Image (cartoon, rainbow, N blue to C red; front, side, top):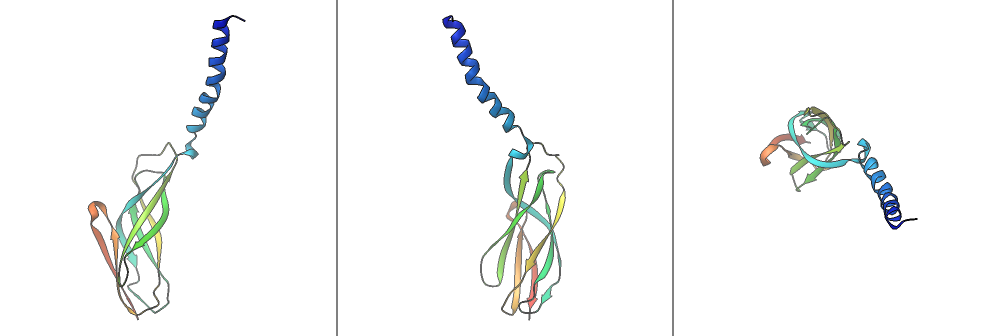
Length: 134
């Protein structure tokens, strides 16, 4: 075989796995990222008994149509808790609408008291929600 033909063949053999990897990377199921979401509203009970679990409906804005609840995180201790909604985005091709999604946040405390939940919104602003546990 000629040297130039051998070179071309080796380049082609090298590019096949590279191109195959590019095709796989464009699979919509391979893209994922997570981000904090902005809470727009919280509804539910404002009183609970000690050790009673209550469900709060937390409305939040997704960045695009692929957004789903990943989890809630809590920061702080005592009777003031900062609650953050973490959204997960799976998919490389997502609609660009920013839907409002409702997710259930479960609240339960073993000690009586007045609890203030601070749900994170845009611009480091919080939405306060108070629950009295007795």
